[in-house]
Length: 213
Length: 187
Image (cartoon, rainbow over all chains, first blue to last red; front, side):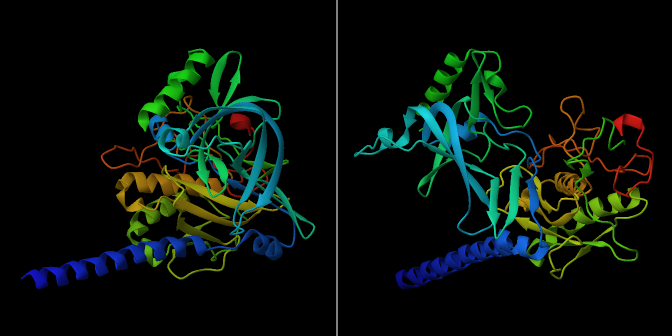
C-alpha cells in the first residue's frame, strides 16, 4: 500500500509537471505570435508608431499595487534613454531620478544582509528607438511618458537588474500643488488620496506597504 | 443601446485616424483565435457580429482558426502574463495612420471572465482597431458606450452587454467605414 502511494505520488508529480509545462507552452506560444519590432519595421519598410491601449476593466486597487512593491522612491525626473527589450518585442525607457530619496526597500525589511538601493533609474514601458534608419515609437496609453523636472513618487518592482513601475502603470505618481496625483490614465485609480496632502498621502502609502509585508 | 452616446474619441496620427485599411468585399479582416482559446469563440462571434452589422461598408471581420499572416488584414488574439485587467489592444501603424498589424491581448485566465464580460472585452478592443479611443469617464456611463472601459469581466460581476448598432454614427473622417458627414458631435 505504501509503495502504491509512492507510485501514485510520482504519477501526480508527473501530471503536475506536465500540466505546468502545458501552461508554460501555452503562454510561450501566445507570446511568440507576431513579429519582433525589427521584423515589423522590416515588413513595413517604413517608420512605425504603436500603441498599447489603456487596459479595459475596473482600475486596480492600491492593495494590489502595494503588495508588489519592492521599493518606494521619490525624486525629480531627469534624462531618459529608450532601448529595445531583450526579446525585441517591447521598448523600454530608463529615466534618471535626480535627488532620489528611498522611502522603503523590501530588502531592508526582509533580508538578513540588507542592501541600500543605489539605483536611480526607473524603467517605463514604451519609448522611441531607431533601427536601421527607421524610427519606432511605442506608447502605452495608460502611462505614455514621464515629464522632465517633475517631482514624482514611485512604487517599484525589481525585474532583473531594473526597477519597473508596479503593475506597469499604477506605481507612478506626481507631486504637485501639495497633492499626490496618479500618473496612470485610468479613471478611478487611487481616489483615496485625491483630497489629502501629499505628505499625508506619501506617509500613508509607505505605511501601507510596510504593513502589507 | 447607443454605442457612442458620448462624443466619440479617436486616436489620431497627425490628422489621420489610426484605423484598419478597408478590404475589398468579399474579403474580410481576419481575427485569428488560436485553438487553445476556442472557448472564447462564442464571445468573439457575438462581438464580431455586432460590429459587422453596424459597419455598413469597408471593414468586416471574420474569425479564423488557422494562423493568418500578421498584417493589416489579420488581428491575433493572444494572452499575456502581464495583463491584469480585462484586455487591451496592441496596434502598429504607419505615417498615414493605417494599421499594419495588431493584437487583442487578454489575461491568461480569460476563461474565468463572465460571458458578458468576455463579449464586452472583445467588442471594446475591436473598437480600437476602428480608430476609437476610450470614452470619457464618468461623462460616459458604463452602460452607455461600448468604448467606455470601466466595465468588469471578473467572476460574479454583472456586465451590461453593449453593442454597436446600425443607428450609431460610426467612425468616418478620413476612414471610409461609415461615409456619414463629420458635422455632428464634433466630427
